[in-house]
Amino acid sequence: MDTRADSGVSEVSIQTMPSYEMHSYRRKVKSIAVWSISFAALAFVMFIILDILLSVISKGVPGLSLKLFATQTSGIAGGLQNAILGTLMLIVISSLISAPLGVLAGIYISLFAPKRFGAVIRFISEVLAGIPSIVIGYFGYMVMVLQWGMGFSALAGGISLSIIILPYIVRTTDASFRQIPKSYLEGAIALGMTPFMATRTVLLKLATPGVLTGILLAVSIALGETAPLIYTAGWSNFDPNLQLIKNPVAYLTYVVWTYLNEPYNAAHQLAYTAALLLVAIVLVLHLLVRLLQRGSIKHA
Image 1 (spheres, rainbow, N blue to C red):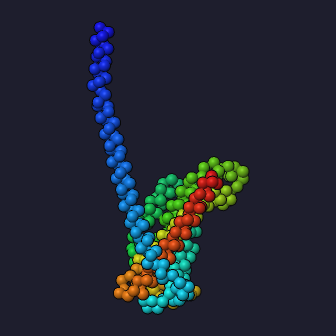
Image 2 (cartoon, helix red, strand yellow):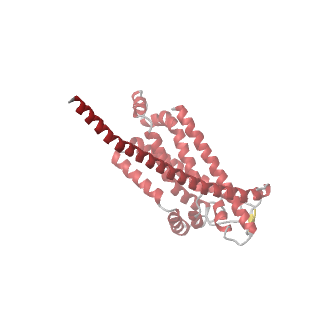
């Protein structure tokens, strides 16, 4: 009996071993296949990105000179002084409008708003972030340029950009404050602080790196917009001034979008140089974002 039992166990183990090994072999093959496809997709994406960056750098660097930053655009040639100053002006206007509104809205929905109302605001913010920028540009043209009588101007362009970047600031501010334990707010209130004082002195200090990160990312998004500015800011070969309405301004993305379609080498050179400046500015902003994120992690 014992011999038969032992032989039965050995026969069962022998029969089950191949199926187990086959199952393990199939899992390894599937794992290798998935990882191979993932790495191939990553290599393909990195190849496209590096090809674009190398193309912009190789074709944009020859156009860099001191004259480029000190000369206004003239027809299809000249410099980019007016476009650089106009871009900075549009970014400042949009940031001054969207940053306070976005931060205050994010603080409210993360700390003080009822759950249902906060969920509605978050949903509206997500929807606004998904609207194509050209739709916002057309809205700005119909409302601000025509109906409000602003004309093509820096203020109309700045408001359009602020509408585009506002949901990103709201989202990052909301996420930054929601990561802070509620016990911080409750403890500050228990010590006699008002909710406003506790938010300003305790919570805002902890959430500042995340809030600044959202603002910088929103600014980098605004730097790449062209469609809404064509409908609202227009274009000008002159430097911007303090006249915020009925006064078109220049911006770098217009040079990239328009001058590449011109049949002249000088226009192509100016477009690639403008694209290189935009890439450099966005790179600096993202490096600042990384530094802020690293600082917030160390602080935590």
